[in-house]
Amino acid sequence: MTAARDPTRLLELPAEVRAHLLHQLAGLVTPQRLQRMDDVLAARTARLVVVFEDVYHPHNASAVLRTSECLGLQDVHIVESTKSFRPLRDIARGSARWLTLRRWGGEHPGDIDACLAALRGDGYAIVATSPDADAVPLEDVPLERPLAVCFGTEETGLSPAAFAAADVKVTIPTPGFTRSLNVSVTAALVLHHLATRLRATQPPAAWQLPAARCDDLRLLWLAGESRSARALAYEALRQAGLLPPPVPFFRDRPRQA
Image (cartoon, rainbow, N blue to C red):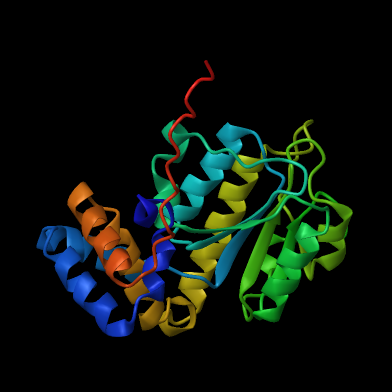
């Protein structure tokens, strides 16, 4: 079903149609489920976003998605310049459904530049994880601006382009013999620290999602709750003319005698 494959098409519906659909979808779930969604949305933030650059090991990719969702982050940018992003369902535990994932091509190595330029244009400071001597500890990362935290491939880390674009480089001290941490562990430590500091030091109005975005997410989440919900969403798209035309069916040509 197209609505299930690309639920964001629902956001193209006219406002009054979206409001009616939201009312219908809300009637398919319990009040407790609705309250749970509202509680999660109240803790959601887009002041801290994740950027994956060519993270391709399925276990690591899935673990970072799950960590991001658990910590209340909403946006994850996936750069696929040279590696495809393939999360594992058993590890991610459905976390991708609740996140806003944006993929950045794979056609050319400039995808990381385009991603970071777009984020900087939206006001984000670019944060790169690095073991270099000029990197600062997590507690010194300023929180006045929204942060886009970048994590690189398991083998070589972030690309030179990502490091060149970074406004801040951060490090996690590792006094042991092994110098670097697994990318999923690094992400968990960095994101937990920054998310905790953000909520502890900034008023909720500074990091919570705007009401309009919460409404959009509530609609998308409810539309994926059940088969009945997906059917309602599909019908709304169909009536609005937002579904692609059906693929023509061609019968096999008769065999030549």
